[in-house]
Image (tube, rainbow, N blue to C red):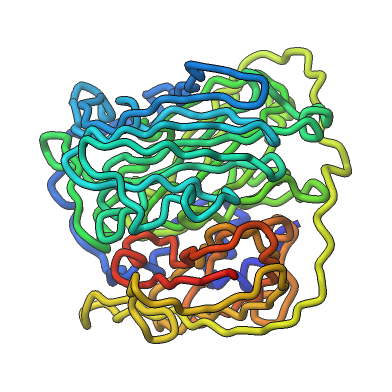
Length: 486
């Protein structure tokens, strides 16, 4: 269970911890680089009444060709005008014209070949976040697809089933590109997961979270490191939607695709959510919790059993972390419970087995810091901003290392994301992590002053790969570095 002690380890204040039990209120004291001060909301579009828009499901992309070992997909990056706010058309950047992009459903051990055509006027790069791929297939920040050009990415999918996602990674442009829509789900399945009997089909629902700042015409307003004004919360591209659910178990595959916003989520009645997976796949065992804590780039795989509610019940997924007005950022979506139906699905007591932790032979330390609000717009790892010509960390292939990562910023949260490898969080500030963080991870949240100890094994591919803050405006401001595995 996620307890008061666990919440404090994550850096939440006593007020926010108390709000977990009540599933209400918004903690305003942590921001993404902008002071959390009371302010009049900026001029924006006509107000959206929460829970009036139905939750859309991202379209599943069908392969145009299938062989015995591979599926082939075609994607074009292009501008499109889509209805996000009711009655208004918003110009966005898209994969295949949809916001968010289409979902690729891949299989462990089966290759996915994705041809990406850049129909935009600026360079792009497509990164499969959470994928263990060679350098040339990783979608690095300097491996660009020029306007009018194309690149074919080959994903061998030699990893366990997990909730992954794709997004733009073109350096100095990734922040705005992702904000304006260049992201999509990549759901990797495997036979072991299928055999568990988890909710599936219409009862497996993807939830892509993000926020935005809209002007009076319904267009997205982008400003670097703007945490306060991105107060329209979207799920699968819809503002504060509702979902009709039967009174049975549902599995949710959630991605925080925001640039900066951290969510601390709970059901409005305080009832438990059963975590079954994190970034890199299923947990060893279900982890019931009253909250979901998710920073940008992180994923949560969880089950809610709606059979405990009477038909007609309305349950809100609340958010307890700011910045922003409570009436806007304090609620995410609503579940409208309908009739009870037969439910053959189950959540077994054992979900899987994590790889053994080898004995580490190398220890390293990393400090994350950025200019405090009002003092500049630079961000650093070990007091250096990103330089694509510099290798920051040399790693011997096959070794296991322990990395101690500390957020030395005074007021600004960060997180830490590694390409190529999934890691295990050994401890936070010298204390064990709570069960929902005990699985395979590629992104870890660090509030100001917080330290996490990670264990990583580099036994897949050789090459140069980045690691960076995935509060993606921060990485665009320089909080990124490179490791060479050889």
